[in-house]
Length: 459
Length: 157
Image (tube, rainbow over all chains, first blue to last red; front, side, top):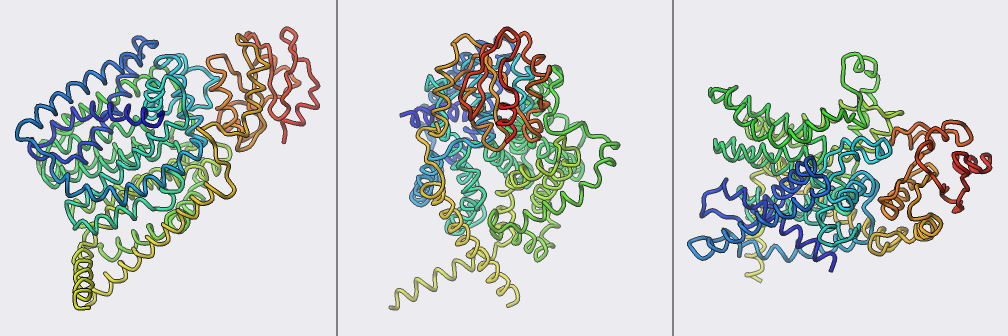
C-alpha cells in the first residue's frame, strides 16, 4: 500500500508538471511517453521550487502550500485533458509502444525486487534522506537547518529536489518510509529508459531502439548500483539527458521553444545535484555559439533564453550566497590553489582512465565510445553530433579537473567515492551518441531479420 | 565491404556488451538477494534494531543526546537511523577519526579533554550513547563522568 501511495503521489506531480510541456508541442502531436517523462521532470522541479520558496516565507507551512499548489495545477490539467480527449485529441503512438511494457515491465519488476531489498545507501540515508525527514517532520524547510553546524554531515549546500520528492511521498504516507521512497528512483529509472527509447525512435526502427534501450538499462553500474539505491545520480542523469535531447532537437529544428525546454531542464538539473551546473553552463555556451553561427543578435537572444534559467535558479543560489553556506566538498577555486594542487592532476587522470577500462562497471561502453569517435570522426563535423560529443567530454573533463580543488584530506578518498558516479551521469548520452553514429546498423539488422524470416518460411 | 566488416564488428561488440551487462547485473542482483547481503524488511536493517530500541528506552523523550560512533563505513547508516527515530530531539554527533571529520567537517575531539565539554556546553545534554557499548553514560551537570580510557579505546577501532 505504501508503495502504491508513493507512486500515486508521483503521478500527481507528473500531472502538475504536464501542464507546462503542453505549451511546447503542437496540439495534435502528443506523445504519451514524452509527456509522462517531461511531466515527472517539470513537476518534480515545480514541487521543489514551490516548497523552497514557500518555506522562505512560512517555513512551517511550506509543504502545505506545495500540496495545495500541486493538487490545484494537477486538477486544472486533468480538466484540460478531459476536454481534449473529448475533442480531436489523441495520443500519438500509444498502441504501438504498448508491447514494450512486456520486456521492460518484466525487467522493472526484477529491479524493483532488488531495490526494495536494500536500503537507500550512504548518501541516500544521510545526504538526501535526513533532509527529507526534516522537511516532512517540520512541515517545510526549516531555514535554520541550513546553517546549523550539527547538520553539516548532510551537506547543507546540496540542492533539494530529491529530498523534496521524498518528503512529498512521506506527506502522503503520513510517516517516514525509507523503503517506499524507492518508488521514486524506480520511476526515474523507468522514465530514463522511456525518454531514451523515444529519442532514438525518431531515428531508428523499433527493434534497434529496444536493443539500445536494453543496453542502457543493463549498463552494469547503472543497473546494479545506481538504479537500486537512493542516490541523486539517477535523477540528475535523467534531467541531463532530457535536456540534451531537447536542446539538440531545438538546434536541429531551429525551434526556440524546444531550446528553451532544454535549458529549463538543464537549470532544474542544478536543483538535483550541483554537478548539473556544469551541464547548464555547457548548454548556455552551446547556445551562444549557435546564435553567433546563425548570425542572430547573439547576446540579446542568449539573455532572453537566460531569463527563465535565472528565475529557476535564483532562489536557491541566492539563498546559498545570502546565508553564506559554504561548499562542503571544494575550496573556492583560485589560481593559487590550482598551482598548489597541480600534482593531483596525474592521479586524477589515472583514476578517470581507470573508469574507462573498468569492464565490471561499464562493460565495453567507453571502449566503444572512443572507437566510434575515432572511426567516425568525420561525423563530428556536423554540429548536432559535435554538440553531443562535447556534451560528454567537457563535463567529464570539468568534473575531473574539479578534484584539484577538493577540500577532502586526502583528496584521493573524494576521488575514489565520486569518480564512478560522475562518469555515470553521461552514460545515456554516450549510448545515444554511439547509436547515432551507427545508422547502418538499422539496415543491417533489418536484413538479418529478413534473412532469418525467409529461412524459416523456406523450412 | 570495408564498412560492412566495421559494422559487423560494432554489432558484435554491442552484442557482447548486452550479454556481459546482463550477466554482471544478474550476478550482482543474486548477491544482493541471496548471497552475502542482508535482506532488510521495509528499509529498517535488522542489525540496527537492538541498538535503536535500546536508544529509545534509555533516553528520556525531552533529552538531548550525544551519539558517539565508531569510525568506518557503517557509522553514517547508524547515525541516520538514530537521527530519524529520535528526531526532532537534538542529536549532537561527534564523529571520530579522519574519515568522519573529512565528511562532516567535525574536528576529532579527545573525549577526556576540554574540547568535548566545550562542545556540550549549553546543549543540556543528559545522556550519551556510545555505539557498540550500548550503555548510557551518566552526566553530572556539564561534567562527563566515565572512564575515558575505556571509551576512547572503543571509539578508536
